[in-house]
Image (cartoon, rainbow, N blue to C red; front, side, top):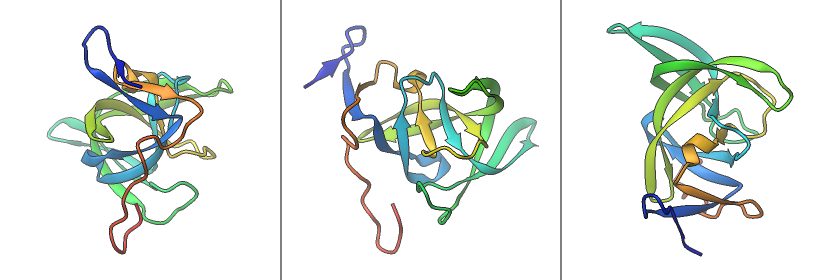
Length: 159
């Protein structure tokens, strides 16, 4: 089925409740994301987070494990901090998080999104794609997974 945004006449991408996405500006070729219509903000689970300034701009340096249930293949990332948010999880716990702006790629499309950097452990997915990143671009089919497929492997490298 084809979905079209009536305000822009652009086709929407049909996705499942979990998909493989890329964050090319952060050097992350593939990370499994939960497509979470219950979350307003997108979040990336990070570790070794440090902040610094370069040319007067606030920056974040952090690491990401792109593969669920694996602590191998850590990716070291850097991004400009665009702000911070107080985010509440489903149990009501609040956390102050830095926000960075980066591009997300799903299938053949990419666009800029805001992502909060979470140090909270114990989550199943390393990334949540929230409503603000999906707005006018995606249609979620909740009973399907990986509608856009799985990442191709490069010889000697995990996805």
